[in-house]
Length: 187
Length: 422
Image (tube, rainbow over all chains, first blue to last red; front, top):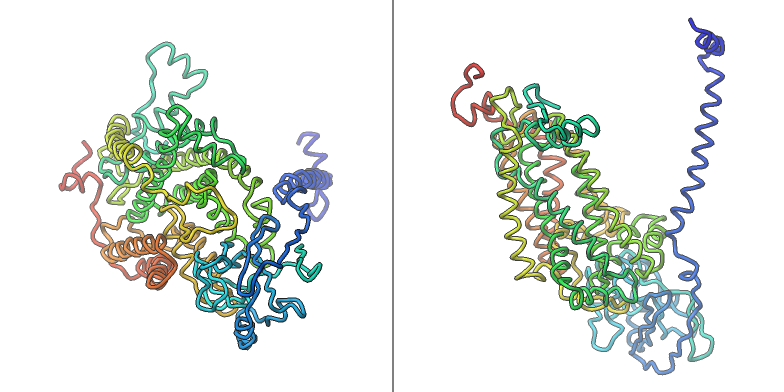
């Protein structure tokens, strides 16, 4: 038995743990923590950068949008639909029992009080992110008269609620408020 | 190296002897794809597609490096830089068409190569690791092809990026942060384009590395063969060079003829006209489809139009689409039949040909609009696809009575029982 082996066997306690194990575990843990600390910025750099996140809210003048018309605008590089609902469309949306829907919401919950005719939603299908049709003149609005996503056939009603097709939720309502009667601030 | 009778590398030229002592690279090549690799004598043409896929990858790397010299990965000018390649760069149109069609030819070769493995049981012991590495190569190739298709920044590029990264948003809770992390924004934009370019440049070299592992793993048991019977002696093999280098060279010629016909006469036949429209975040093309080589998986994604219990349809579709490929990782343990080749498995053979039909149906539906009857056809074909791997193969492995196997490769070739090894 060499001197080294002898000293090793002396260091082994009754439970088989050597004193040197502590040094091994500590060293590997320390290296592991350092590795994690290094990897975090390398992964995090892929998240949206400051200029992408610096999303000044936008102001939209909606005075020119006639009843029944809709416009598309851009917010955070994504389309937003602003739609002036007709009384018939409001009636159609309210005629549905919200509890029966896939994503139960009433029109009132998706609009601002006193402004129920202004339906403001993201123009991003909640399925896989296509822009649904229906905001432009003469586009297919689908069988529920709201929006229709041509990619995978999701149909939204006049409150932009999902009614048919693969999309799981209603078109998202972004944060917004009416700065005045005719100007909307989104974001 | 696998067989004791493999020829030994014996350099005669003094320089090669010197080289063999310092860096035995020629020896490595000799043993890997030269006369030092004994290969079953009965390989049919389905065994030619591995080398074709490898050559297609090399062509992609060469044309891709050239394109990167002229392409600008910036959302403002990417589309214009591709048009610059097409119109202004000397021979740029040819190099770009070769790259775009080269991707298709890579996938043609790899699909036949995978189908060969499925039919002849090349995934079974002792070749599981070759198969697993092959699945990894295929997944990497899918990622590479997808990101490459985004680079021209046309309408299909943009919306393809939107839809494919949207797949990750289906994951509960962490889905949307993951999508934003992948894109570096809320929608595909400059950040996404830049990182896709960076990774599109990187991944083919990663694929090359995994291919080296794939071939390394292959050389331990040696190649499978159409009978699935193990090599029993020197009479069952021929040296890889010159026998299979010559055969691979002949099919390479055919492959390049077909490739040239596409590049020079039908360069856009496999593409989409919409991708010649610059990316527009405000307008989705009426009919978004991926490239043809993804159609079967895309059909499975779209086959889920209904929620199942509490799982939303969107998540189901995504899980099924990834599951359709991930199930391949379990294949060596799902199919427990000791007989490798479909030639000697009468029932598996029928099930396999139905699988080919189901995949063809999925392929067709994946390229068709998301409406009936295509959705229902995808559901039926998709159900069979999963049943083949998860039910039919495990059950058949137990119930099926295989046909008698030949005693050796030589017997199957000559039709005569093996005499004493000559």
